Image 1 (cartoon, rainbow, N blue to C red):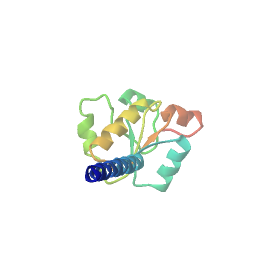
Image 2 (cartoon, rainbow, N blue to C red):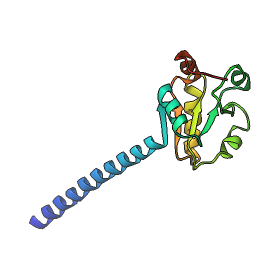
Image 3 (cartoon, one colour):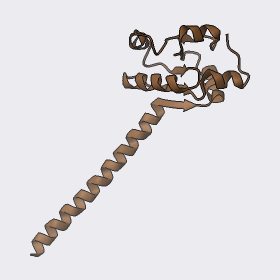
Image 4 (cartoon, rainbow, N blue to C red):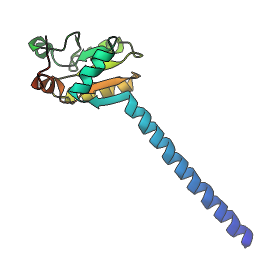
Length: 140
């Protein structure tokens, strides 16, 4: 009887330790994901662009929206275009990507897609170009 209780207690201890380990791994995974795809303020976005001249700046709005004004050096890759995945796939996955749209919704979706295909560092501008221009920052 003592052996059965000992075995049961041992099994219970192993199961508890196993659950705690899984929880820690999940937390590590979430922390890693957080460093891949970040939504940052317009001020942080401007600072990242200035500090990272090799970053790939991507505007995911429509061509008509892009023509109304965009960030200097931005490439227009319309998230609604049929060739969006192909065009995004041609970017360098090892380089930082700075992505924005009008208000942050489309760029958030685009950032998720980029993360899914292996981009390592993605920054999405919170509030998009609307917030950018609203804070007095320049567009072309």
